[in-house]
Length: 331
Ligand SMILES: *Cc1c(COP(=O)(O)O)cnc(C)c1O
Image (cartoon, rainbow, N blue to C red):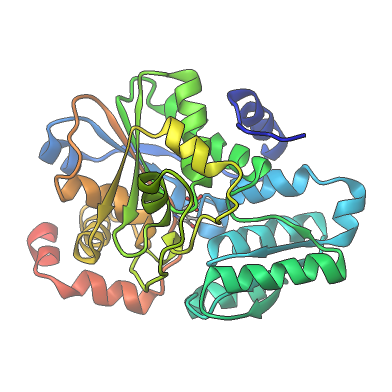
């Protein structure tokens, strides 16, 4: 069967499958952003999810959807960190073997946590594509089942459960800001929200340094981009030249995509800390950053997703102490 779309029905089924395995995270009003933008701005606090990112939703749904035979073989993935951590956690809950392959760009704090969860870690090459080749070798030679970070129907449906929660928590949302990398998150969230509330706009947000989905959407087909270090490290990596689902879903469901500089992302992390009292990683802060940078307007309630908080705390301290804005904002 060739599945070309993940639908609201798939996402509702995923929600039942993962009930009790993931948290329903809160959505709160941000007084400071609301005042600044002149609209109600809500923050979906998904960085507080188990394993510190939304990736547990997709990983839990994908693991729970495996056959008995597949479970016995174990699972493997290439990951920039958060998918690996989520998959390690989901596999451990089910008592499955998990192998996570990653590039040297992945920060050490993410790596240690995956090992702590009992998964085997393989470090290969300098890009996600190198790590992916090792995954394919393990599938061919050891019979492991590949669960990729985004381009898979069960992963997309699992991430979509986040969209169901957002539109239930803010039913009159005019706009939702969602992180965009490989597009599993944006595809699932957009399918859920447009399915329930077709008039709600969904805008994807990426870093300017190496935004593979944006470059692909502009080109009209998946393209390769150079992977570069960025504060939003969870948004790094390509979408795959043989992308099956997320390119088409993002093309058809997203109303717009915007890109942010490293300074703008840093300002988002600082605002989250000083004003919202939340510790978020670079990727987690891009929605806030887009609002602060004036790159999106609001003429109705906005829901901003905080997608993760897996940041090295020394790096976080440097970022929040860097600029005068902490002092100005905090006092
Ligand atoms: C994976 C991830 C994203 C992007 O998700 P995609 O499905 O690859 O677009 C955003 N934020 C965080 C924290 C992530 O871990």
